[in-house]
Amino acid sequence: MTDPKGKIQGEGDKEADRKYRTRTTEFVKSKRGQQEIGKAGDVSEAEARKLEKYEEQGKARAKGEDPQIKHQSNK
Image 1: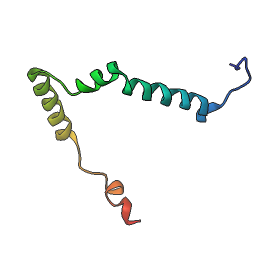
Image 2 (image 1 turned 135 degrees about the horizontal axis):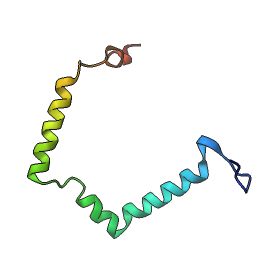
Image 3 (image 1 turned 180 degrees about the horizontal axis):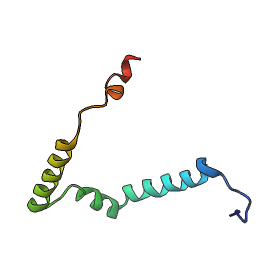
């Protein structure tokens, strides 16, 4: 597929990045954005218990830390 304007930038599309960052910053600063941020962590008691249960299930399946990641800073 070709870009009709001939401005294909590929994976490092700086124009798209700039637009995304501008819109995200505007949203975060907006009244609606502040409201959404304010209620971001709010969950009911039932949902909190369910999330804790799922977290414990995930931890139970874990085999431990990857030794390559654990000692990565020693390289």
